[in-house]
Length: 347
Image (cartoon, rainbow, N blue to C red; front, side, top):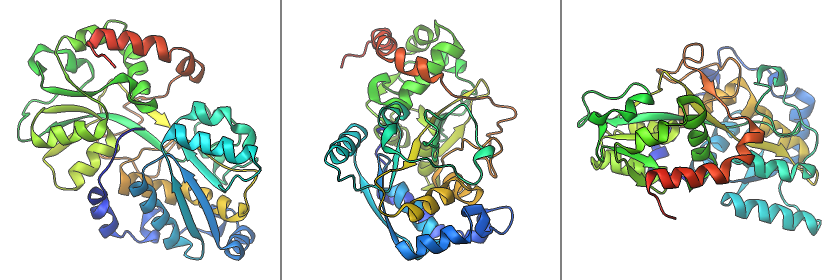
């Protein structure tokens, strides 16, 4: 994931201060998080080290949410870009000095390559999660991001409702903002969806509207708010925070499908605080934790039946699409090169 989110954009979420009891549909019990024995053991450890490739601001909010429930566990976060984080983990592990208790990463492929460094772990509600999004038994989809269509309400009075609508001449030229295909794993998921679900000629049809191309979601969303484009293809969490921050932005989950990108999180074999690590992931994976992810940060969920869905997103009506992981790895380079040619993008 390559979209940088400004710290101010999370101020509203932090100020909202939802009480923990209000997040779930029922009062949570110790068993929801692994049982009292685990909680007591985590309290004795009192800390954990958390490596993440996600951004500091949303992860800080998640830690705050966790600490509302379990204030006795101090979480030390280490944030690094995706490739750098994997290199750090490999280097530390080779030296026998892996410092992380928990790791969370947006690229499941990179995590699969280092799965041997993670211990067996299963959250209490494992059966409630989709069984087609794990790349290794010990790695779990703590976080899920979904793609959406956002528009500037001051400029666009007839917004597109589907991905196919983005091919209509009325939405061009240079009215649509798009993130380039080579920007990262989340965008590659969307590119794959477009070709496999919308058709092999979708790129050609959509490129004909002459969209404005941006390197990541941050400048795309900024351009939308400034009115440089009136429509933007964005990860929902990016658009959600803009809207929450008061920008003239509305968001549509296209009726022809929502491509989702699932993260991978696990507890390292080298963990010095394995009980605190398990408690943290158990909370993140719980109904309470997932509701926090969705309501406060605009994430989606890999739960089969999420406790809460964003407005306009009904998984029973709108198909949530996840890529075949083998194809996700195998097709990437060739398809991105083809996308670049179709859209006239040069790296």
